[in-house]
Image 1: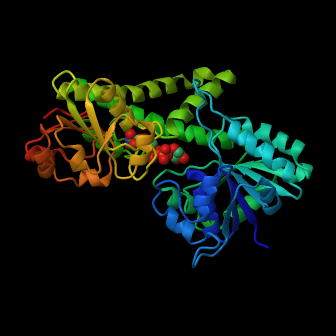
Image 2 (image 1 turned 135 degrees about the vertical axis):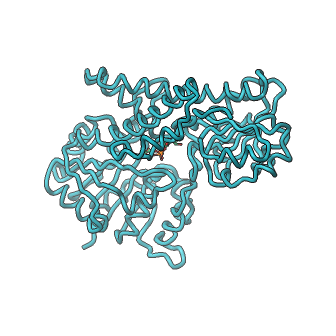
Image 3 (image 1 turned 60 degrees about the vertical axis):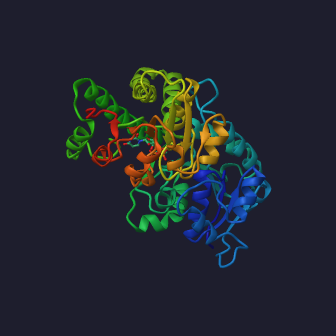
Length: 446
Ligand code: UDX
């Protein structure tokens, strides 16, 4: 009989994973404590913007016309415990308030709620990003609480999906990593991932701590790569070099690679910033803090980028923000996402607003989320309207729509033709040709 799967936590990760598992042919029950999320998903609506996810969901949610019916959602742990052979934990692990460490309360409460309801053999598979050592602790807790005892097993299977590519990354991952304590867990996971494995996806089997560390190590490496190129941007600015050409040139070396070498206002989002901080905090608890002190530097290079953009904007408007109008293009932390968690773009917009400028923001998808987080900023329904009367235009999230803007048309509505590219994604020639004063990060001013 086909495996029955539950997915606990239906945010970016869980909603995508649940829909993907249904796509792969499994019967899936998505579980969330938030009734409104369950209602939205049950109606085939995705509560966030993620390309392709709503279509995938609608193909499978029970009760929708033409759907396979393999996917349902509930708030009931009783139902989940009874239903699943494999339970995926996909709840979020945000940064604790006022601390670097990660907040495990959602993972802990998911296990505390699910375990007492496991009355037949089941595999619980953690996907959330957690401090190393959590899986061993949760496995013990599971064995303690589950009526089936040792037949309730745990595995750790970190998730590497990128927002904006979540569906693709989930259906066709570039690797599958599983931390297991026994062969049964490995066998079950091979069954779950039979389709991607048949495509030749590498399958790495490890112990718990290694699997947990793979995720934090990968995100630390990516963060380091971005901060490295941003540090080079700082030096380029001091020495009149061009960081974009530098990144291209070093990127031809296969050992370095061209990806994740885009200098700009740095990384944000719900993962990289909090993951490197939680990693440092955990290493400290383990007495290995020295090993990760470089991540503190990675973090501070990254945060400095935001301040630097504010300074470039201040210079562009003549030295002071009072009475100046600033147009901000982009609010999400990256393109193709409406996620504004720790968004460099919104952070810069907020800082400039607090210093007295009239800031107007436009983003193709993240307007509602941005407004909820920063209600005091002004918002406009298009790039053109945001730019109206602006003394400087800031390009802070590299949506395709902004690359395709017509600089001449925008030039008609602004007070001054000054643009700052915080993502090194606009074509300087196109803007300069139409009389714009174009400045970007880590490249010569003219
Ligand atoms: C990241 C990891 O890539 C993913 O594997 C993990 O599962 C979750 O965290 P995500 O947060 O979706 O994914 O975004 P990512 O594409 O990694 O971008 C992170 C941030 O870095 C964004 O703010 C992006 O704008 C910035 N970035 C990325 C740069 O500033 N320069 C680059 O060259 C690349």
